[in-house]
Length: 633
Image 1 (cartoon, one colour):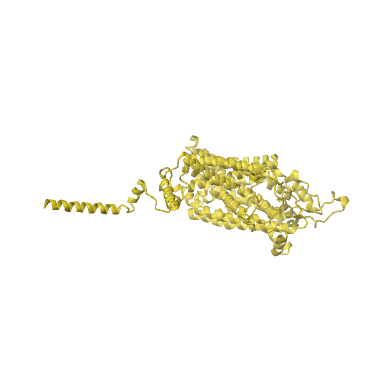
Image 2 (cartoon, rainbow, N blue to C red):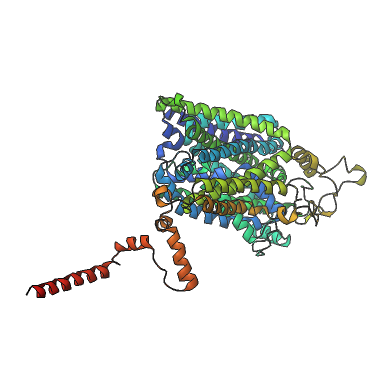
């Protein structure tokens, strides 16, 4: 059940190919400027950037996690793809036309320019840096455990190989090496996941049979239209989650925004998002299908037991794909590619933030040449990679609960950040004080929500059966377990030591995770679906920003640069807010024409409303002249 020679060869070739891309672009860009190193000189083509954007979103955790989700909970989460597509269109239509022409390197330069607050800019950058470095550690940890089971290399060696590989090509090649290595890795990921789907469908008698088995196993659920917010997933919850997940990743996250900042025009930046939408939904389709294929294969002999659903993909690959030389190697290469692409994306973006938001303004660097700055940035990438490796090793020693806590809190920060950018783009009335108060209070609420949700038990899996597993003689149950159980126990012991009891209840139909108790403390609040977490953060940030601005005072058009605001909103903003409220009250509530104040009259002079008054004055002057003439006669 281990990898064969051809599998190992394919894995090594994929790693060498990524390294070769880095070497090639390191030679070409050995004297590159800061702009060339971080943004490719803003001359890169949309298609490779789109593939890089796609693989920066789909990590190895996504591959194993989404497949496990389909296996254990069904297909409802598939609907988040609708929210993903909607958010990508909104980013392309509203975010990019405002932000791209500003020629930013750090996305959070926009925050400083819009609110005229360096502190707010640095606060958002610090949050991104802390979250980014922790995320690198997390990206390295779970896949390395899975790879340990698949290829036999130790966990620590896997982290070091992955960490050093992406650190070296990211350091020497800059963003071009990262993007073109990502393009290669995107192909490897698609082929690796496609191998599971095709081979699995063939083994199960075709895609139609896979879907039929999934249907009868209650795995096909797409249109649960319930509005109950306490469900784990529904149509509306998944669409909302996909929408805010994408706004967070592709709209307000430096690591992804830096991709479409690297192309040559607003139009090209928009095409980066459109191309990435097609690639992302296609790859997610294959990943989700792999989960259904696994369910069809294991429907009568569940290998998961009480362990995490992510292990099922590893078990399936080791049991099924190793029978055909090269297929398992393709999948392992896909996992490596997913880790490499995600980590290298983070390394490049962290360097941009450190340089632009913190180091560039220091007096010591003011006299440095562009080439010298480029070498410094390479050194920063290298140090970031080393830090990422250390964090990956450290996270492995801190336990599963720490990982869940970090992810929950990191996720809690995304909503307030989305809210801050929406305020900046669409509410020019809000000044720095109001935005800062809304941002900070929304973060505090979301962190509280994330911490509280850790106390709520997970919902039960859909029914899983072990009735079809070959049962050994009763006397030898513990000594002669099946090969599937051996693999599952090994992986479960590694991934979740407290959940390693996977061989129990061999011949019973089970629902592995317990149902949550009815009266959990704080369930009325913390029991709300995690899909809504970014919604609370976003809405609170916006609402509190507006309320605090009403107390501290609103902006006027003289306080804000026009190019930092959505054009349609700016046209509204130019008019007096007081007059707009008065007009709304009269015309909507009282149903009559609103009186105009002096400013409105002054403004209306230019539109011709003063013309009747001018005509009257001219007529009066003519009449007076006629009377004077008669008097003289």
